[in-house]
Image (cartoon, rainbow, N blue to C red; front, side):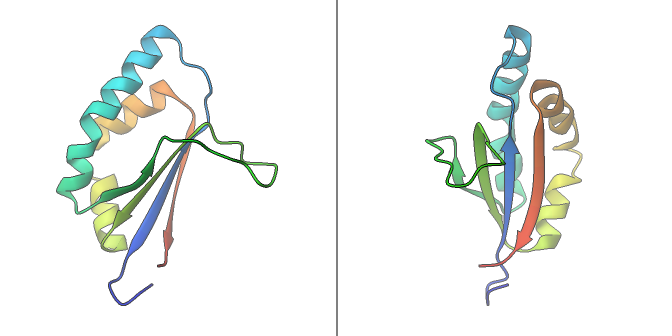
Length: 104
């Protein structure tokens, strides 16, 4: 952890195809989640964009990297009443994995 206590959270969505209704769910998630992230002190470091794989294995199709002031804020965001319904929406839309890493 650096002197500012920065935390980065990676969200990897690994589903390459969306059905029409699933795609709509994901678009709704993408529209609603930025305000919740910001309300808990988070900010986007990367979202979307070109992904180039250097070693075989993960093969993500979409990557989002968020930064929060500390692990407490990240957990407050994830467990918040505002984010709970968005988790369900994201899970209906795509297969994903989330993990937090304390670091610079």
